[in-house]
Length: 249
Image 1 (cartoon, rainbow, N blue to C red):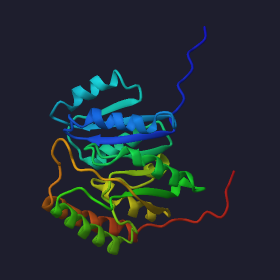
Image 2 (cartoon, rainbow, N blue to C red):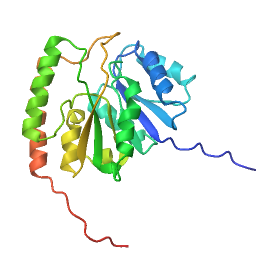
Image 3 (cartoon, rainbow, N blue to C red):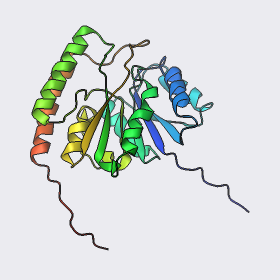
């Protein structure tokens, strides 16, 4: 008896963390498929971070008609960083693109970021980050983000104008080599540099939120961010990147 051939592993996994985004699921998944279909093998990994609305049911229904879609569900809300980590760990592709689930990131920008990663000889040491030059957010959000990015850049030297953009491309191997903690997704550039890599920022489209409500406040985010910033500074001071001069068989 001839066993059926194993499906080819995808080249790209698009990891999308969501919490209570029932109305944004189908439109965004459709955009991701429209962007990547015919370009490469890909999968879409949605991580439902303990949603309490109809998100789980709608994802289940969408899986029936979207062969590229895979879904994980956290039993309770653990935060965006935990959701991204779960998605990357279960991904089957060597390259990861992350995308916010609220529809503000434009999936059409993924190929441009991926091209930057493809252009380097050692992609495991590059993080390609989206840069929302024209943010479509409230004035207070834009001002607080500008302040936070400036402070992070000065204290961490992460050379990144927009660390909060959810659109990023990197290798799975690189991510799994990073230290993991709550809110780490905001510090991926600094963590990549800490392991001897570098960061490239690419201007991307940013869209106003059309459905649902933001899950983040301004004050609570700032207070938590200060503690996280101090923690990453501690990691930087204790990081050592060995230089391998000889390889042993």
